Length: 416
Ligand code: EPZ
Image (cartoon, rainbow, N blue to C red; front, side, top):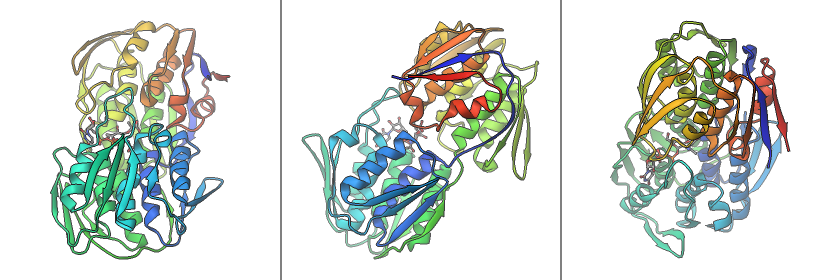
């Protein structure tokens, strides 16, 4: 089991480039099932979650090849509609293939995705949506099973703007004759990228990024080349890395409109941020102020940046209040930050942070992807040596993050 050894204290300086967005690539890989040709995705980092999605598509019969940062996916010869448990358990997002399988084959059988550290991660909204669309879906022996060929589009209302449910329903509706309207849809940028990908393949979808999405069913999809959007959460993680080390970092390949909620919050804290046509410059300073925030569906403050921002607030004198409204258990990083000397109290969904002038290096464990990122950031700030175990969680969403941070002056070793 690999671990990261961080000797903290360096102020990060220099330039770093953001990779393609994991949470755009995963639904787009699922959507490639619809293509009767070959799709080429560019800007695809080599991440564990992308390897698992590739495994899922390969089990279905697709052919996948990686050429540097491109994935070539040929779904023409898909024969199976079943994703076994050993794959579904590895990654929740594997359930995203269900909508595309229903749309193309009128049949799908996907083992229940595992929950994870941050919450139970139910999929009731996906199943209810498929039902409302006119597919038959039921659960049996740990599998979600679906079939049917809806005759016409319908109007669906999501109880909660779930990102995955919105993506799954867009794909499931893409071949249903007539018009489907998805109301109370999630508005994340990754859904806009999915819409653009599908429309370039021949779909007729409008409204992604708003809370109401219209899908006019079509009968076939071609092949395309697609460059995925930059990863706004990786960008945000590097922004906080520059701030927490009081450094000066230029971050390239950033879609500035996607990181607005974080820019506003970091500026409120006192981080200097300069947006330019080629990227974003982030400078830490000595006079940071505490700040409060609440995670919300996009365009609110992203839950995927909550642990990293909490790490920063732990180093700023004064009291900050954080409220996590999206996931019921997304404070697994708190006990680990406490081991480094952070003063954080949890009351239900609320975290009360009393910032400290210093943190001490310690041996800590990553419980999930973004909690692991938060521990790296705290280790960059802390005095002395921090060892982070269970690095596999971090590998799910960050490609060689220690190499990217070392190129900015950090001192991080990866140890088997
Ligand atoms: C996506 O997960 C992202 N993952 C998550 O990123 C992100 O945190 C989340 O959206 C919220 O922005 C991918 O895109 C692969 P949701 P998803 O459905 O789709 C509840 C990361 O770190 N819910 O919007 O699973 C659910 O339990 C990951 O990159 C139901 O109750 O999120 C949660 O409390 C972590 N029933 C809330 O909604 C459902 O059927 C938001 O979930 C579906 C969701």
